[in-house]
Length: 245
Image 1 (cartoon, rainbow, N blue to C red):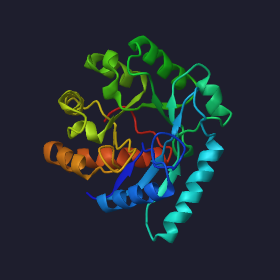
Image 2: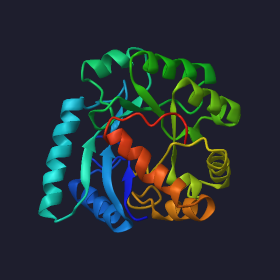
Image 3: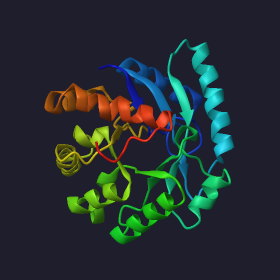
Image 4: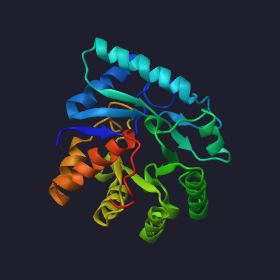
């Protein structure tokens, strides 16, 4: 399979710690296209202590970058989104358009402080669920108080949450510990999305093919397609994917 959808990226230029210029963004998008990525949700950080863009500003930036892609004859479809740092009042911010969902769906990509207590993460995700959103926990491998006990990951899924890990973690770009942990979650069927979390052209590049090849070899084409295309496609269509991987 060479048709991937990336639901987590920092390619929109000049808005966070990802791409810092249009030139870099275009290079990243050319790299992604060459790697087989056909659709990308742009998810700049939304944090309370930063100058975060509203959902309208992000959407305008996505439209502008999409036009530049047309001039480059680059066939990648872009969608607006945010990586939302959880805080009190986040549901209200989403409803008011200060923070965005993924591709204008009911799915939201949410991150926490890596050292966050498990109960705080669980309560935050429950708050989003109660607000009518489908929370996707970004790069779950970073939360030691959650993922060191897989029973807690299972509890999150049973609540109605979804789990995303970074492709680079699985293939070993961030060390053996992250690789072992994400492979364990993958083996137990506790992952719904594998995304790039792309920030640059190097270690945090916008590429998925290496990881997709690993998943396909280890678990088969159906599993690879579900994680890299089918589940992301349901997000784009605002369709229920269920909590089973």
